[in-house]
Image 1 (cartoon, rainbow, N blue to C red):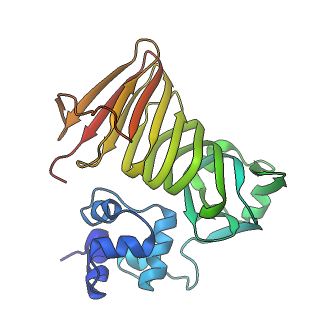
Image 2: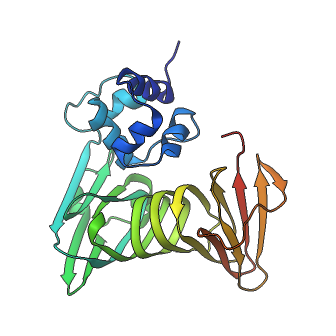
Length: 296
């Protein structure tokens, strides 16, 4: 029998006598994320892979493929990181540009940490420069490409993990161009995303989130409290929510439309009135499909 990642993850968890809920608590993520990984409906992002690797004391290669890596200490061949200490609440202006995947996670720390990861780009310090500026009540994080490094190459070969101190989060503005964005436990006054992103995963967190993108997007909400708003122009996007997620859908803008799916088929609306969680579509000639799977 060939063991898959989801089988190995379930076995590691059961060997420690942990429920899905308890493992989720240990990793500071939602139980829905563990369920999704163990059912084969998705795989963890790089931040959560590293957290699982540390928790179970196995390499990422062992976790994913069932075999030890040839290298002993790293799960990515090339890594580069930058840290900065802060001592109070800050707003964050983060400009990261192109990458294959970007993970942003709020953690119990007093440091801002940005890690660059790749299995193909060596000498990351010669290709990229991370600049962190502390100006009054705002932290500016800017990732610059150096030399002949292009955004197209970065989008195929670079992963970025950003760790922010959860107790110091004010407003966050993020500008990116990536295939996948994972937001974990982001609790802040307001989160604003601009740029080009195809897939967004929201796992935990509280507050207002606004996504400005003219791409068709898939947004997977594992858990979140507050408002998530999409501003789009001539785009069709889908938001997937857990079956027990309660929300109010709001349609604004011109020629916009919200429709619903259950178990992959068109359904009547299941939006509620006067709900704390709000899913909003704004823009022009855009459509939002809100989907849930009742069998989860």
